[in-house]
Structures are given as C-alpha cells and as structure tokens.
Amino acid sequence: MEPSSIAKLLESGMLIAFGFAWPANIAHTLRHKSTLGKSISFLIIVLVGYLFGISAKILGKSINYVLFFYILNTLMVLFDIFLYYYYRRREREKLRFPQEG
Image (cartoon, rainbow, N blue to C red; front, top):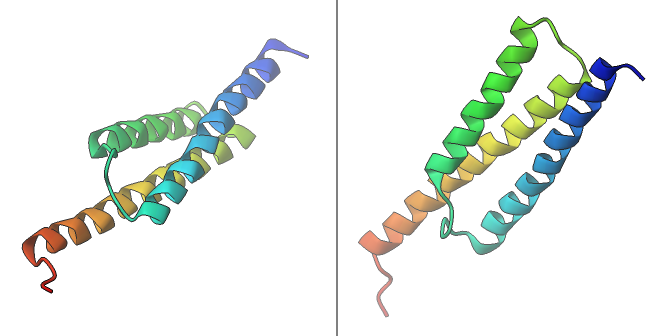
C-alpha cells in the first residue's frame, strides 16, 4: 500500500473517531433538552475546522471518500449548533416566564 493511501485511511479513521462523538452528544442534548455543559464557541470552532478540511479537499483537488466523512461530521455539528440555539431559547423563555402554581 502506498503512503498516500495510508494517509487517506488514517485521515478517515480520525474523522470516523470524531464522528462517533457527535451522535452521542446530540442524543445527550435531545434526551436532557438542555444546553448545560455545551459550549457554542467550541462547536463553532469545530465547524470552522471541518469547513477548512472540506475546502482543502476541494481546492487541493483531493476529492475522495474522505470528503464524505468531513461532510457528515459537518452536518452533525450543524445540527448540534441548531439544538444549542433551540434549547437555549427555551431555557431563556422559562427564566422569563416561570410557570406559576
């Protein structure tokens, strides 16, 4: 196996490993319906990193199966960001209008 093929496999492995974290993180947010412990800055930094990776693949004309994992992870981070803002808004509304009774 040539070094460039090994490099692609290693890069895919890294993206797959990171990719396992996002569904667990999303499931946690959906289960608890809370942004507690989430950092929007972290999510945005990770998103920018994935966008850089996608851009590097496209600009470097290195479009291969690894790009799929960058896109998949990017979509999961975008969904996690959506959940952050959705639940954050609900948390703020609860603070503004506490239930009486």
